[in-house]
Image 1 (cartoon, rainbow, N blue to C red):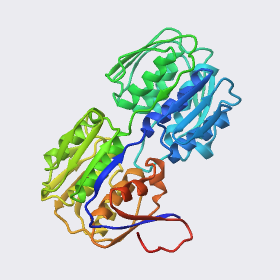
Image 2 (image 1 turned 90 degrees about the vertical axis):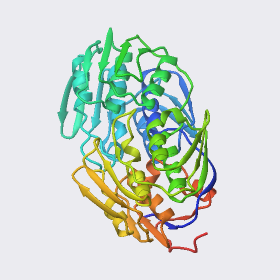
Image 3 (image 1 turned 180 degrees about the horizontal axis):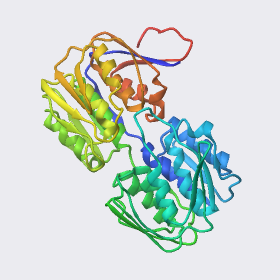
Image 4 (image 1 turned 90 degrees about the horizontal axis):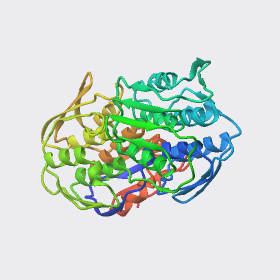
Length: 425
């Protein structure tokens, strides 16, 4: 099992380029099923989840070619409408093929999804919405089975905003007969990016990015090319890396307007931030102060930045309260941070952090993708060497993380399975 070692205590300095958004690339790749012709998708991050989606599309019969950060997909012919357990168990986003398969091919069989162990993320809202559009939906032996000759437009209300649910229903509605209205829809930038790609292909979508999305179904979608938006969570992670090491970093090719909640909280903590059109400059030379954070659906503070901010608050003066409202099992990184000397108490869905703590390097174990990132950040700030186990979680969402951090001056090394820790350089 791969592990990463970090010798901390060095302020990070320099520039880092932000890659494409994993959470935008995945639904965009899945949506290629909705029409024939060759789609060229650029700025696609080479992370494990994207590779898994490519494999899934290949199993379904699509022609898939990856070259660097460019993916070429042709879904003119689909030979299977079943997404098998072996792939879906590793990545929750595999459920995104459900809507496109059903809308274009009239049937879909998709294993119940897996992914990070951060709590229950039910797909009932996806299924209820598809049923309202006329699909015959059932659950059999761990698989979702759905059939419909052609979906019909419907009025759909989501009990809670769901990102993958909104995406699945929006894709399915693009080929449905009539008009679909999704109320209490999720508003994330990744949903807007998917809508923009679908509209390039001939879909009629209005309101993406608001809580009411209206889709007028069309008979077919054409081919198109698309450049995936930058990853706001990757960008946020490198900002916190600069802040926790009291460094000065510049992010290139990012979208500051997608990160308002995070930038406001970093400024509140005492970090100096300057924003340009596609750049963010961070300087964290001053002492940090504790702040309170509450995770919420976009445009609120992102749950995917919660672990990183918990790590940052261990180095801030005073008490910080981080309240997690999106997932119920997302404080598993706290116990590992305590092993490094952090003073954190978990009370229900709140983590109370008292700082500043003098973090010390220790062996720790990652439990999920963003927890892994939080432990890396803690290791960058800690005295001595931190060894992080189960870092395969990082590969699901961060492209070349160790390399990018080394470019900022970090002392960090990935050790492949079966190799002894070498001299860190």
